Amino acid sequence: MKPVTFRSPEDLLSAGIIPAGDMDMIARVAEQYVIALPAPLAGLIDRSDPADPIRAQYVPSKDELYTRPGEVDDPIGDEAHSPVPGIVHRYPDRVLLKVTSTCPVYCRFCFRRERVGPEKGAPLGKAELEAAFAYIAQRPEIFEVILTGGDPMILSATRAGEITRRFEAIEQLKVIRWHTRVPVAAPERITPDFVEAIRSRTKAVFVAVHANHAREFTPDAVRAVRRLAEAGISLVSQTVLLRGVNDRFEDLADLMRAFLAAGIKPYYLHQLDAAPGTSHFRVPVEEGQALVRRLRDELSGLATPHYVADIPGGVSKAVMNLPDIERRGDGFRLRGRDDAAYLLPGETE
Image (cartoon, rainbow, N blue to C red; front, side):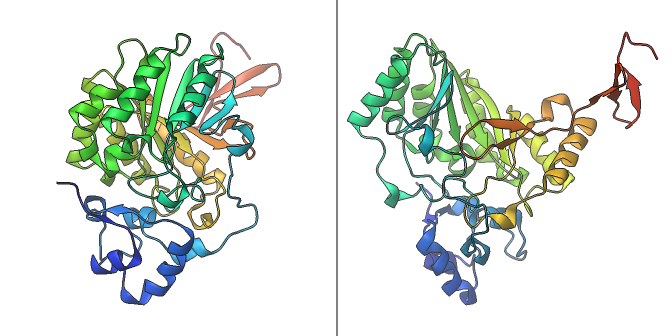
C-alpha cells in the first residue's frame, strides 16, 4: 500500500506535526512553496523537539516568509543555460535533463523551490523529450547526462525504462546519472521493476542519493539503496550543509558513515544556494571548511566529500575544502592531521 503523504497545513495539524497556533503562518508559507511529506518520513520526527533535524528539513517555518538580499529564484542560473526545454547545458561534456517538476517530498531549502511542485507544470511531454534527446545526440562532446527535476525517480518504471533505452541509443553518451531523494524519502518506489528499468548493459549508471541526516537511513531506505547496488548501479551522495541539521561535526560524521555503510560514496557537500526564504539554514563558509577538514582528519578518505558552492549565474562549482599544502619560500609545506607543518617529500630546508 502506498504511504500517505501530508500535503497541506491541515494534514500536518491532523498528524500532530504542527500545533494549531502555527496554522496561519504555515498557510502563508504554503501559498508560496509547496508541501509534501510522506508519513514514514514524518514518523522520524521527534515530536518533543522543536529543533529536530528531520522537522527542520521538511516542515514549513515562518523563516521561509523572509527573502534576504542576494536570494534569487534561480540561484544557479538554470534558465541562462537552457537551450531547449528540460535541458541545462552548463558544462561542455554533460547536461542536466529535468524530466519532471514534482518530488515525493519538498525540502524547505530547495534551490529550485520556485520551480517545483505539481502546479509548476507536467513532466516533459513527448515532443519536448524528443527535442532533448535530439539535442544530446547531435553533440558529440556530451559524455554524461544527469536526470533531475523535481525528482526523476518519481517516474514510473515504464517511463524510466523508455528514457534509459533512448540514452543507450546515443553512442557518445557513456554515463547516465540520476539525482534523487527517493531512496530515503519514498523507498517503496525502488522496486525490482524500477531498478531493472534504469540499469543499462551499455552505459555506466550512477545514482546520487540526497540525504542530510543519518536518521534518514531507515532499514527500508538501506534496502532500497542495496537493491540498486545489487543491480550494478554505482552510488554517490549529495548533502547540503544546513544550520540545525548537520552543522555539528558528530552529525555530519554520522551521516558520512551512514552513506558508506549503505554502500554510497560521499561525493558532494553543498554550500546552501541563495534561494528565497532559506537564509536561516545558512552555515558560514569558515565553519563548513573546519567541519570538512575535521572529517578528513578523523574519518576514512572514503567518507570525505567535496565541499562545493555553485557560483551564481551558472558559471561552475567552486571547491571550498581547505588545502593541506602551502608554498613557503621556494618550497612547499604539508599540513598533517596533527596540524603541524611538514616538508614535501623529496624537498630539503
